[in-house]
Image (cartoon, rainbow, N blue to C red; front, top):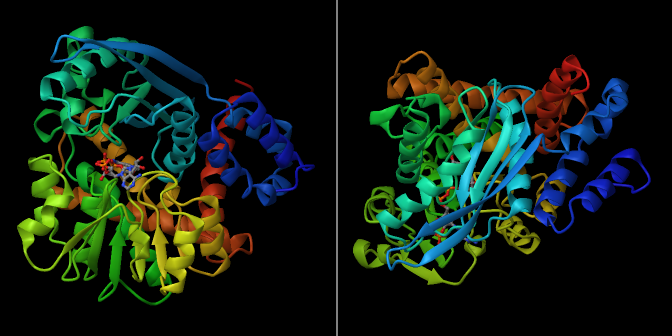
Length: 448
Ligand code: NDP
């Protein structure tokens, strides 16, 4: 971006006003870089300073989370909720518990969430939250005490018409259960629609757990289908081994692909016969163990390679599903050299700007997170819909809704890119479509 143009100046302003938040700067730059043609076509957006307003969160909450661990020691963590934009509906976005969480990370995730939620076509705004608490190695009682303390502050800021958090890294059904219990106790209201990703027995929705991973793979299927091909017989590499990765692997295999590797922060697991997803689920979801245990249990020549990058493995489809900036420019070069056809982001911003640039320049099909992983939040909106009508849908019906939503997201990104003379550029299509819907609603509301 040229520094002298309006978008360049705005980016400089954002950097200045939000110092030491590199992930947030990266997310803003990635969106602004797409928007010149839209701003040129819609001078009314510029006059209303919509871009300036969209880069500024509506509200940011930072709070102390004190709790007592099993040894009786007082622990202090920091809690965040960034309520970024409510033009299309209540703030919506997950809570992340990980030691790397800080305000800049939460803002990058909240900013991305605005456009993703818009793109999903559901009536939800954008927000994100979390804490620098690390749940790894903590007992269930410690997790419970932490979640209760976290919700004791958060409850006053959320509500089914205000702000509806969900899970993210380190926050699954167990953590959401403890948080929902505390919310219910504090408010004396069984307000199911205040959180999504809940357990099936207490207001949760079928397919929510699977939705982000499944949705990413449906998006890949659409990208491949637009090129006249499909997943059958293709070798796929999936990073991570958490919620998103597990269900991405499951869907790839259902659609005829072979997932040869997955990973965690310690290294990658290679199984040329195809990862046994049932075994990974057993180890991760039930035993809360590590995938390094897999090879010994499977006994088929599979191998855990500690400390190495999963992107050194040849594959035709790559699905980064772990965390931000995990796939670098040099990883992208290796993947391209090894003949990768399609890359889709199951995680949020897992590819660095250099990697994205290389994929776009070489014509590698590239599905950005906003589009490719929007199935999770879209299914959260379906959970809110079921909660509001006190209903519960079947697995098949819910999955069909998810499929339809992913096909529609793909169609809108694809067609927008074509309309602006950028065929096949899903980054441009996703940013432009997501932005215009939010911008039109903000215009309608006046200066607020
Ligand atoms: P989980 O906590 O369930 O899993 C995260 C996985 O990523 C773990 O296997 C973790 O390994 C691994 N990981 C973390 N850091 C690294 C690293 N530096 N290198 C390699 N692996 C790493 O989280 P989710 O699956 O829910 O989330 C994954 C990503 O998807 C995040 O970017 C999240 O924001 C995004 N996302 C999630 C949605 C959801 O519905 N859950 C919705 C949309 C996006 P380890 O155990 O070693 O830390």
